[in-house]
Length: 348
Ligand SMILES: Nc1nc2c(ncn2[C@@H]2O[C@H](COP(=O)(O)OP(=O)(O)OP(=O)(O)O)[C@@H](O)[C@H]2O)c(=O)[nH]1
Ligand SMILES: [Mg+2]
Image 1 (cartoon, protein in one colour):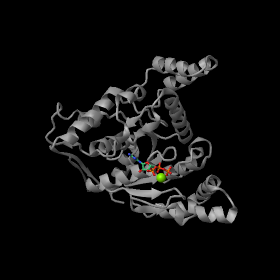
Image 2: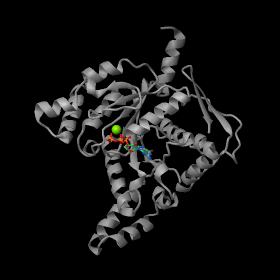
Image 3: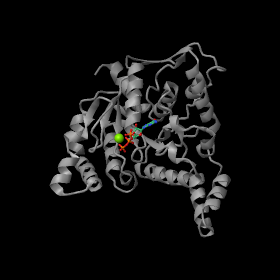
């Protein structure tokens, strides 16, 4: 090894820069929009000249709107399991996922060997909630990725259509919290299907919720016998201060760009990149200002709080809308990462 290589290696070790790859684990309840998010992200990255590989981890999936880089169905098929073992769809799925767990050192390792340093994988997971609450398969899957030097972020999608009242909000938070506690990963929580939300003001209270507001709403909706439980639940959400959501509207490139920037930040993707914003005008472009300045690093943390103020998030959505209406063409150049240009071009 040449002297300079050796010095570079030492520096890399010293600054924790030895990372083989990056990964998003896209999780969330059934139908929350995981696969649609994966395909939109793929399209967005393609247009931005950025390479990502989307992996299907759902043994029940049949149709894909993205090129499938790796497919769990090559290892095991849900139909075969149901037929041969006489299991139902949910039991069959858990069986398939446990089979994946048994094959981490064989099938998964071989598949991962096809990817090079700095490759970016996006895992489209099944929606069965037990996989995120008490079945340890995904936890072990993540541990395996970490052993292979992947920097992994959990991306939890929650359908905005379910955030209509406080009871559903608390229920969504609890499911999300359960996944966060189980997986012990940096987390980005996303409120999906924002295009279906007609009045964004309805969601304002739930993006950065006031505990007293939540408690009084809960108490109004539930019988007095639940008062203590309500208080404990609100305290849990408040004390951990962990559950907050970023709204995502897949129709808008800026919205995808914003979410991706938060995730990249969590996994330190492209942290060496020299971020340059062309024709930057803070007044017109508050959105980009937020994205590039939101640089809180959570190195070494097992969980990451996505602390984005509700107002700025809603402002972002409004900015995104305003920008979609204008014909301005903006260009954000994110510099080179290992020679690959990451030019994000938005011609709304
Ligand atoms: N309007 C709208 N519909 C969406 C969006 N994302 C997903 N959908 C729809 O929601 C339904 C479920 O989407 P999927 O992407 O299959 O959800 P999933 O989380 O992968 O579902 P499972 O894999 O079954 O858990 C489909 O009918 C999608 O077309 C969105 O952003 N906006
Ligand atoms: Mg899916």
